[in-house]
Image 1 (cartoon, rainbow, N blue to C red):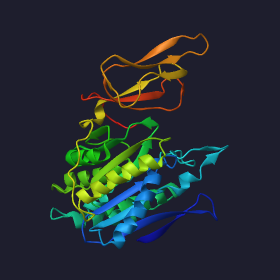
Image 2: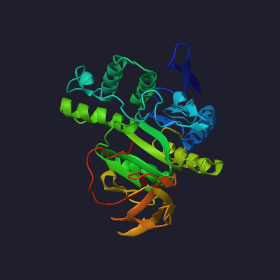
Image 3: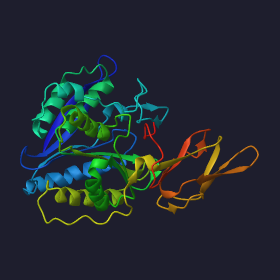
Image 4: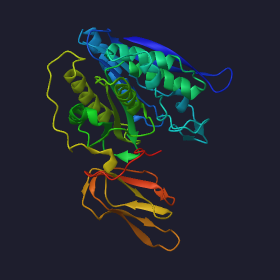
Length: 363
């Protein structure tokens, strides 16, 4: 195992942050997998999981069982880890710019295309994208973080960005190009929902990896072997448990074995609990007015159209407004905050139809 320390500038003179990445295996010996967690610094289940995975990979490397290359970043956002105010941690948005740490990754395709032609292969595309990224200035702390993480991801054949939701079952986000591969990971992790699209909008980390390659395809008029890039949502923010982390570690190790980065007997992926559905088919249930949220359904349930997931209590007069899933589908996530303001997103149901367009991700 090789540990690399990446120094990031702080927001004021005399301050800085240090990001650690852990590297296993040798370049060119097999597939290269990049895994990171904690990009949203207040989402900690993945941080625990990837630290466990690093310990296991160190043992496997000593046994000579790594047949590829792995780059692991267990805590991807040291800046976000420092953002505490009056005892409350806020790690989703940058405290200076108010930008989501998992949005606005760069579109490098124009600059990279200028370095390429129709003979481009995976190696030359990676080189061109990294050169285009290196030529971009990192004008702020959050830009330096994006630059450092994205450069590591651009070197990989497979990218997993590990997050968690508020209260949820384990679920995945990915691209339609990778439906089969996403289904394999969903089987190994027993992900309850797999949400796919051509483009999610907002240039989140995993989607930006794919979109850079897709746009290069269009500019060059070629078909490229686009790296697999998925977001793994490890249930909810409170699901920080050794029991769950051990289960997820087992699933990840089986997947790493399956994709050829570890040596060992391959076990075919189990059936995923639910078939993949379009991200554009997610129904977001919002609060029609302010009040106290009382849930009566839990993530993991399959709902029919018109199902009641709970109600919104008006604390002044005691009236109750039902919260209904108009379309039905697989209820995979809900918001932990039980005090809602008007228009607040409360719950998410994955349906089989397609009815949304534009930016498909919430803030």
